[in-house]
Image (tube, rainbow, N blue to C red; front, side):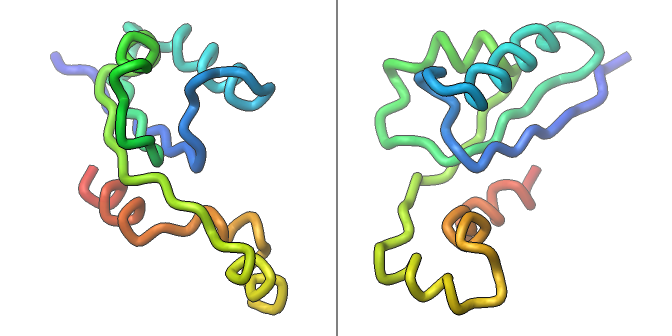
Length: 103
């Protein structure tokens, strides 16, 4: 019998785990790995994942990503007048939506 899949979508790349939210998420995933679920982690990622390969393998069974992007300063100012909160507008990504949708 195969394990059920659990898709975890993070708006931030979790490594290095050097901030509270990243540390909490990494530890939660690390403790869940190998349990009842096949954990698929989806997040934006830097171009070179090599330095983080061992860390990624420690928290999930499969990692899917899209290129990390940043909202420009002008984009953030524009988001102030948009209908979405700036934090939501800065995390939006068509590439991310496509990757998550494919899972």
